[in-house]
Amino acid sequence: MKLLCFLALLAATAFGNPIYTITSLGGLGGSTSPSTGYALNNSGTVAGWSQNSLGATQAFASSTAGLTGLSLGSGTQSYAYGINDAGTVVGNTYINGQSNATIWSGSGVTVLGANTYAMAINGAGEVAGASNGQAMVVVDGQVQTLATLAGMDWSSAYGINNAGEAVGDGELANGTFRGMIWNPDGSVELLGTLGGTSSDATGVNDSGEVVGFAGLADGYTDAFSMTDGTMTDLGTLGGSSYAYGVNDSGEIVGYSYLDDGAQNAFLYYDGSMLNLNSLLPANSGWVLEEAFAINDAGQITGMGLYDGQETAFLMTDPGEISAIPEPGVGLLMAAAMGLIALLRLRVK
Image (cartoon, rainbow, N blue to C red; front, side, top):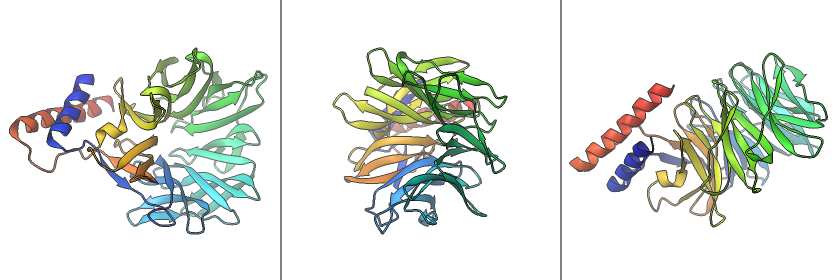
């Protein structure tokens, strides 16, 4: 697969044609207002947050017409962290300085109350988050606190798949944090580390593959994926790395620090961590700093700098090349893109 990625990138470089196209989503307060894309459904709708025209941070959902600010109600700021294929968005609205888990749907807005957090939603509308310092799920409108382990004072869920498996972390008695899995049967699993003292689980796909980040023995942090109880270190682009999103093909996104301290978004694909910026044309004007979600079509959202301006983005794999390259380059590009398409079909 490393050869495949090399062929695709080589062809893209030779022809000057990027593998991915990218769109700036702009902001609620205009094209220069900061924004971050955090969640993404299979229709390509992005949810996140942006500075609005009043200078406040407000949750949004994207559409073909641009960004739509989600109702603040009596709140002063809000953030969206999850969206499902029905377009229901979840996140947090701050009212009188306290977080209130919020569900924005076609039927209206539901606010769950003070000291609650909503971080993810699955296809059945089940919401994962926290309530009063304890991990929770919301099922059929009812808040259900999730079990914790002995000596654990705090926990939160950050992801949930369509089977109802939730992932997150909890604080141990010694003050360190460890990733956790809450299974639909009520059992709880405590994740290990990569040689350090801490770990966090941030996402889970429908195959039960868990992603997140964990401490190393040297004090650094690396992104990981875990399948069938085996934790795999995803590596790094130079410094510490953090994984946040995984699709049902096992493609993972997040961000990593570089050797020089800069922060770049990554795509982990078939055993290789790729800097997302390498999948864009030279002199694109973009520096992609964080990637938080990837859908089953391979679209990616996060936050980057476009001509120095912080903005949410949506990356899309075009799947085909619009122009006709020179014969040698065309054969190379066709072979690479064909192999990518075949691999995606095989792993789905």
